[in-house]
Image 1 (tube, rainbow, N blue to C red):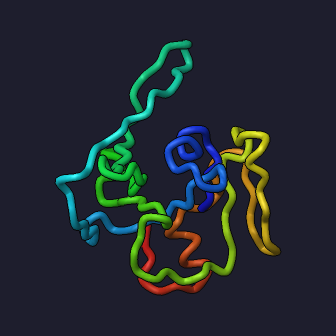
Image 2: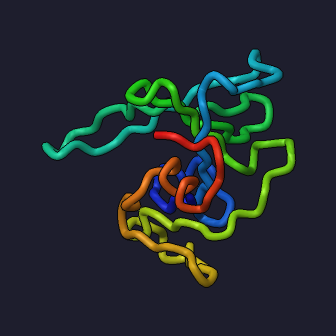
Length: 140
């Protein structure tokens, strides 16, 4: 999923969006944990105030690389940034472009045939996307 929201755009940078993946939090294997810090974005409330996001955005204090998001609302999941993974990843057959309604005007999506576009959140989860693509082992 390519997320164009202001938080992903500002923390991940590249392309004006973050490429977010989903994984089982128990499978996260990280070297150099002593170099990690966590950023929790401030988000506007409906009442006009601000509150901290529940999402914990992990990044490297040494190089500034955005690494993954973990949120206590979904403790079993982890959402790594594809750009931070050192092992080879498969090329997805399609992309989901989400939060296009809040993208910066210069962050112009370049969809391929079959890509899905959403002004806000998509109509399927990452697990549902994997099942639709026929990838094994995906669950909600």
